[in-house]
Length: 76
Image (cartoon, rainbow, N blue to C red; front, side, top):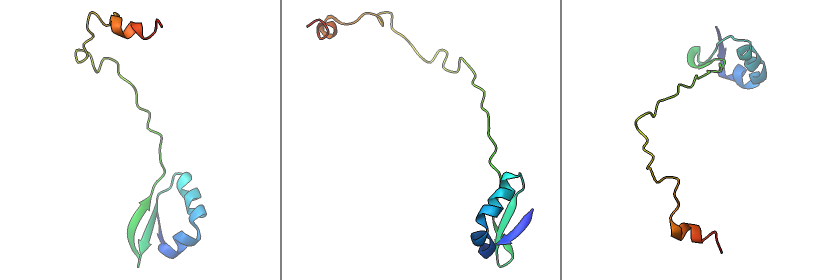
C-alpha cells in the first residue's frame, strides 16, 4: 500500500487510478499522515431469494372482477 501526498494525488490522479484498478490500495496523506484510502470497487453479486413476502401479501378473491362503473369508461 502506497502513501501519496495530496499534491501528488492531484497531479497524477489518472496514474493513481490505474494503480487502484490494478487491485492495489492507495493511501492519500496530508503532512505524512494518511487521511483517505482509495480501494478498487468490486462487483457484489446479490443472489435473489424467492418467497420473502410469502404470507405478507393478500389478494382478494374479487381481484379479477372490475366494477361496472370502471368498465363503463371503456365501453363508450
